[in-house]
Length: 334
Ligand code: SF4
Image (tube, rainbow, N blue to C red; front, side, top):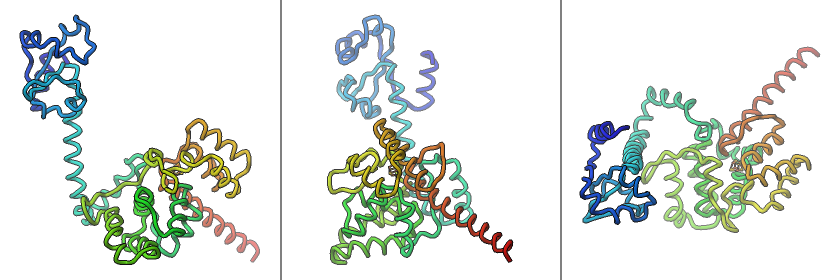
């Protein structure tokens, strides 16, 4: 934009930035140039603006702004940050509003239908991949056969210790919710486990809140979406914690032992090792998936929920195919 377009844009969008006059700019030159590597010529050629420091909180936080009695001075080259800051704040306010309204609106069957059909436009890593029939009876079987290594590890730790630390509870709790475990089943599941290592009273006072929160029933009523592999890989679990991504966080020897126990061939293990050395953890996990399900895929797993959902689909599809073949064979032989 040229200067007049920029001015028009600022006025139309209620940005209260006043141009700094050339006299004022010159009088503040030393201060304005501090922490900036503008050449003399560049300083002369660009315009400066001023506003209340509260209007550009993000820029002020970066400590690159000259402040005088609550007024912030900044060059036109920084306006983009101010606009992004404003946009981010507005999006955040509106998302919070949508989030609050979502649980109310989704109760209407007509709207629920529309919302459900929006899912094809959601990027793969954020899709819910909900399974209809996961419940307390089959959860161990689903975990054993269809969980990726990250979730299987937490599930087994929970079954053994009847307790988990915060990050593991978040990683696994959100996964279960997004996999389709009902609220009632989830509450029962966590209660059954935790009350084996503590009293019911302690569980209800200290622990049950988080699980209700994960389902958007208390507090900010957040509707969580699945954690992506990328999110999970940002964690850095300490010893004794079970969250995180085994392909990234586990000691390599332990991981190889696990892969051997799971029956992977040496060439697959070597290939997974190579991918890990290159930092391609999701590719390594995708290879593990392909070996387990005997399939080929040219995309990469983006979330544990996708892993479980697609694994189950393959399994069920194979069951259907097998029953179809067996049915036809029966017919041929009869
Ligand atoms: S790549 Fe993703 S799904 Fe696979 S183990 Fe890591 S976090 Fe889990």
